[in-house]
Length: 168
Image 1 (cartoon, one colour):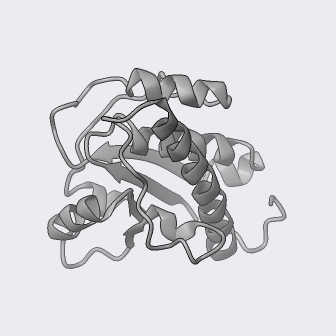
Image 2 (cartoon, rainbow, N blue to C red; image 1 turned 90 degrees about the vertical axis):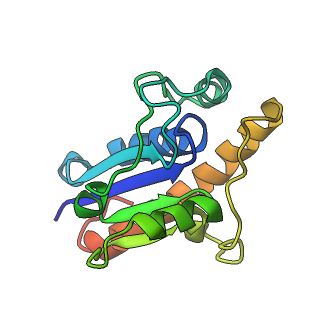
């Protein structure tokens, strides 16, 4: 059973490509038979960065932790994404609201907040803060949150979609 995951932020140059890169690396560490069944992508609700690389500061922070975002390019979320993806996960409430307006009535996947998957559960109302206008510490904070939520999401997907796998 294939599982398709889309991470969404505003411009698709900081938060969502960071989540994309981190989650993709975690998926690739799974058994190949399982990893081949999970696809990962990212997009933005805005259109002003289409085709751009992730922000250089996001790339640098990710690279310090062993993640390579350099091959990613920004794109805008589309209605087609609601037909393709099983999980569409927003980084904040503003983007979640934009996605909810765009979602067709027959969307049967999960449209949610990415931090809902933080393992402690009590942090599920938090948003991934946008580090774009801040300093380097903001990118490190994003990485901390994304790494933790990515682990929680992967555990959830394994339990829900691959319960017979002993990958985790």
